[in-house]
Image 1 (tube, helix red, strand yellow):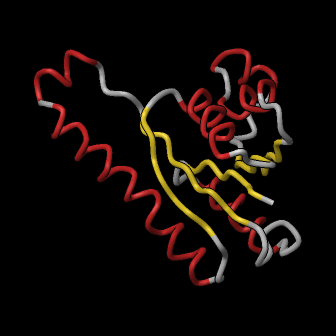
Image 2 (image 1 turned 90 degrees about the vertical axis):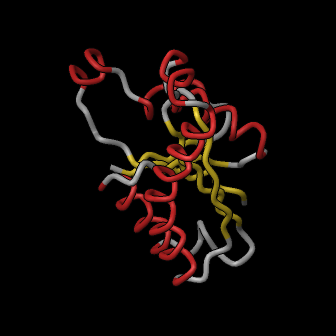
Length: 140
């Protein structure tokens, strides 16, 4: 099974990661974990001021801060994984990446906002859950 694992470096990501490594039936030796970090897009006027190279380096540095600890943790647990990052709106990019990778499932941490919190501020996890065409496991 190929699992897409969106990460943002939060405590909620760490809970979902702990869930995955303690459930070997989800991430066994025959399974593949595809880790993705979505970096927010920098406004075009800022990109023009600082230059495309600076923006790319910034995104790479920020993604590395999130991905490196996760990569070390997964390697330590001998899980089969790949990690990458993209820029854009998180829910959009997660859904596009899942389709591109032909993932069988998305596993992600959720902040666990209640009904009012979701109504007021929206939720990446809620949008992914609503629009995904594959199973989504939310770890709270």
